Image (cartoon, rainbow, N blue to C red; front, side, top):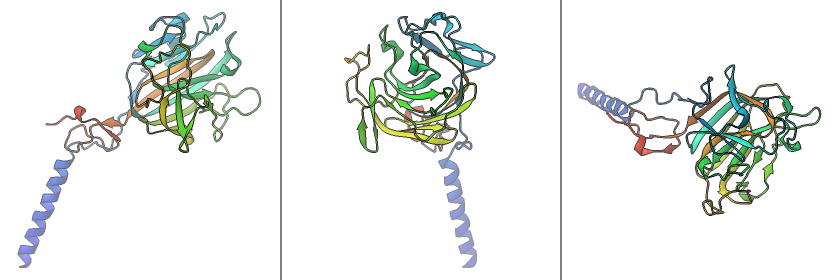
Length: 290
């Protein structure tokens, strides 16, 4: 009887061990696979859109790479002249983490608006740049604003601005164009700052500065006025579930040392070779099997 019991236990354990092995074909399922959006050499994978110029024209080399740094620079400008610019990454994302390191340098170019002093941003869930009109200053998106301090006073980085859209906070629709970060710190020019965004489709977004969450919002939707936005393509109230990532150019030199994305959308079938345990959104069509 004892022998039978031991044999039965061995069979049961073997069954569950086999089941466990079958259920997870990827031994590195928990290893995060960050995608570097910036190769440290050139603007490969990125496309500029400058107000008043066609998509792809990098007016006065506003965006460039030097010494492994991606730069937004106004060295060749005599005056800003409302040449708002954006640099779009080639791929759309929906559920993801974005992390980057940035700093503001030098002085603001002549003619830049006062509010744009030491001001840049990551535009999240951007409209396709191909849908922007020639003189459109900003893409429809929600902006993770990047700031540096002035000579005196507080100016925390990590604010939210919402060109062409609205968000919800604490369950209420917020139609203010910019919502300040009231929790974070003010950083001086020339100092490198680590930022991270957690973006989960149209459900929730976190702005994170040096490890601290400073702003959280939910349910971004198309809404509000944005000069040049084609309202036939973008109807008010439409949920914004995905989009492109873009870097701004608003009249002050800004540098980026690294820009990475962790895609949280992928195959969630444990039987697939490319299953990842950290995925949040399932994309069954990406699954790879034996």
